[in-house]
Length: 233
Length: 218
Image: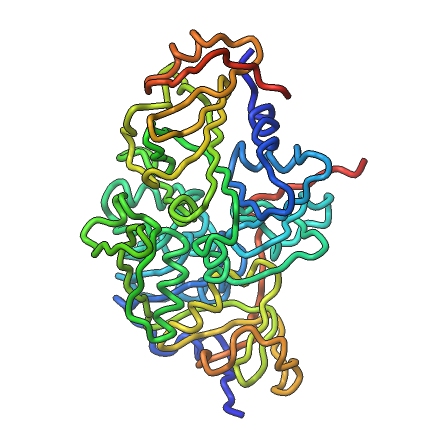
């Protein structure tokens, strides 16, 4: 067993610097690495490129880094719900690369899987296709999308073991397993860290080989973005 | 009377086929789930990673780890499955999801759709919409026929940045049901009490009108 455990978030973030590229897991506020984001928002690092499906909300998630203008460029698929983000983007302070969600997921997966590029039909004929090679397969045009990798990938899982194996819960899985694969250094924060051997190998979603550092998250607020309920009849 | 949003959803629900996988977009499309005809079994896919999405949870049972692509708290149905985003879009791109219902700001007579950006004003991103429209076999658009200023959103050519080309199959609006054919929009049905003339007046695109146009049955 290769032990991946670090004791605290400071150790987990060792080596992060200005101008790096980070991948940050989560969909909306579900499954985001809250502890890493909070710690990054207190560091004097700037000029970051963040690859994340969304950009958090004004006062939580990546919104914390945006507020301090630590992010130079966002690579995302959907960034509504964040007024500060929209302001920085429309004023030109923040560079934004919007990518179809499926292409974003596959580009992360490809980055981790050693596939430099792939063809997809998504975005053909739109702004997204500008400057990209087009090729026809089965009579249908596809565009060439390249793989994404990152200096650090920050992911969040439900359970993890000391060998770095991860299990996610519910829809908090989303981009986390793909980004875990694509980070040069992948930092996984988990709700419950257990000794190697305690998790059933049949149930592992992310094998420990993709994780360089794992830690028990200190605190998870797990905020809900859109609370929707029905009433009992 | 023009349809309200719930009635648009109700009319779209009539298009659902038994034993199919369906992805519903944000807004009016979400309401379609409330009107599944009896005897029709559907599994709803949400692109953030769930198949077999159920209704909203009861108050107090919301789970931050269980949301849909609109970030709303949800539940799962018996037989549901959870997966990562790449697997989710494999279902979509690989055409395993049979029907996509989504909203639009504009549609055009060659089947283009625009629903992700108003330059200089609203830039929220396309989310999964471009992947969905590029691959789904069947795409139904739920939208209002005109904007707040009364201008048609059913156009010869989209003016906003498009989400996908030549992809939508049907449009259900508050006024009409339209089919996208090689020759343009064909008027199939009109909202109860709405005349063909009113629909023509509210439509910038050319309409193909053959014989009598029946009223929608809701």
